[in-house]
Amino acid sequence: MSYEALCITWFLLLGVLLAGYAVLDGFDLGVGILHPFVARTDRERRLSMNSIGPLWDGNEVWLVTFGGALFAAFPHAYATVFSGFYTAFMLLLLALISRAVSLEFRSKVKTDGWRQFWDWSFFAGSALATFLFGVATGNAMLGIALDEFGDFHGTVLDQLGPYPILVGLMTLSLFAMHGGLYLYLKTEDELQKRVRDWMWRSWGLFLVFFMITTVATVAFVPRSTANFQHFPWAAAFALLAILAVANIPRALYQQRAGQAFASSCVLIVCLVGLFGAASFPNLVTASNDPSHSVTIFNAASSPKTLGIMLTIAAIGMPFVLIYSAVIYWTFRGKVDLTDHSY
Image 1 (spheres, rainbow, N blue to C red):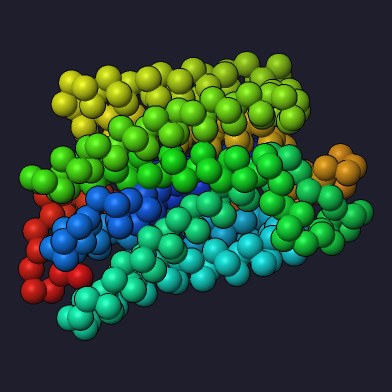
Image 2: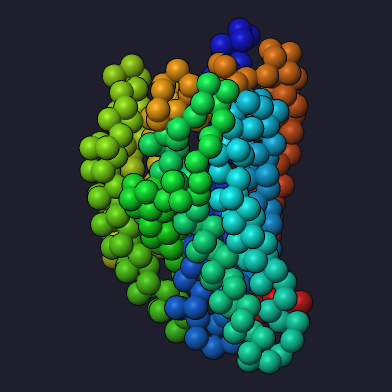
C-alpha cells in the first residue's frame, strides 16, 4: 500500500472511531442531559443511571482509542490540537470525570442532599462535555489561526465565537434526542411517558438548530462544500441525514421507537461523515493561511509506523466489536434494579 493510501486509510479509520464514539457515548451523554428533567423520584433517577450503567465505560473506550490512534498516526496533528485546545480539553476531562464519579458515588450515601448533588453533577458533566464536543467541531470547521509551525497562540475565548457556540447547541439537542430515544427503549410506565414528551421536544430543538447550523455553515464556511465537487458521492451523507431526521418523528408516531433510535444512529454517522468530507485532507485547518494547515500528509507518521498500526487494528478491532456486541446483548431489554445497581 502506498504512503498516500495509508494516510487516507487512517483518516477514514479515525472517522470510524469518532462516529462510533458519537453514536455510543452520545446516548450516554444524552441520558445525562435529560436526567434531572425526566426522572422525578429516586427510583426513576436510579433507572435513568442504570440504563447506561453497564455500558458507559466501554463506550468511552472509543474516544480513548481515537486519541491514541491520532497520536500514533498523526503526531503533529495531535500536538497542534492539544496546543490549541488545551484549556477546552481540561474542561472536557473534568466533565467526563464528573459524570463517571456521579454514577459511582450517588448511591453510596442515602441522603437527599448527597444524591441531589450527584444528580446535578451527572447532568452538568454530560451537558458540558457535549457542548465542548460541539464547540470543538465548530472551530474545526471554521479553522483556527496557526503559525508556520502549526501552533495556536490564541485563548479559549477566541474559540467561543457565534458559529462554534451554535454547533455546540445543536450537538446538545442532538445528544438529548439520541439519549431520550435510548432511554425510552429501556424504561416503562410513567418514566417512559415522560421521556416520550422530551423526545419530541429535543427533536424539535434539534431540527431548529440543525437548519440554522446548515445555513450558517454554507454561508460562513464556503470551503465546507468544496470537496463535494471532487467527491460527489459524499452528498449521500447529506441525503441520508435529511431522511433520518424526517424518519424519527414518523417512527415515533407509529410507535416504532427502535426504528427511531436506529435513524438517530444513522443521522450521527452521517453528520460525522459530512464533517470528514468537508475537512479532508485537513486535520486542523488554518484560518489565517491555508498553507499552515495540518493535513493527513504533512502530519503523518512514517509508512512503516502506519503499516504496523494497520496490522494491529485489523487484528484487534474484531475483538473489540465482538466484546461490544456481547455486552449489549447481555444487557438488552428494560432496566431492572438490583442490590448491585447504581
